[in-house]
Amino acid sequence: MVGTTLGTTKAEILRAAMKEICFEMKEMLADLKDAGFAEFKILRITGGAAQSKL
Image (cartoon, rainbow, N blue to C red):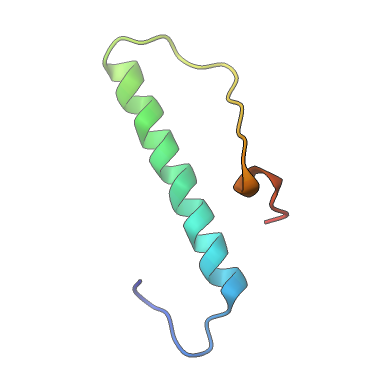
């Protein structure tokens, strides 16, 4: 990870990880659309990250 210091908190690291998951999903959905798949109108998210208050 770039930009972390000894003062970086656990919450900041978890938030960065969740943001990266969102960016990856956005890119994956764009790739599927470019490949000719229909655009998703609803996404269901499950698991521990879906329940996070972040």
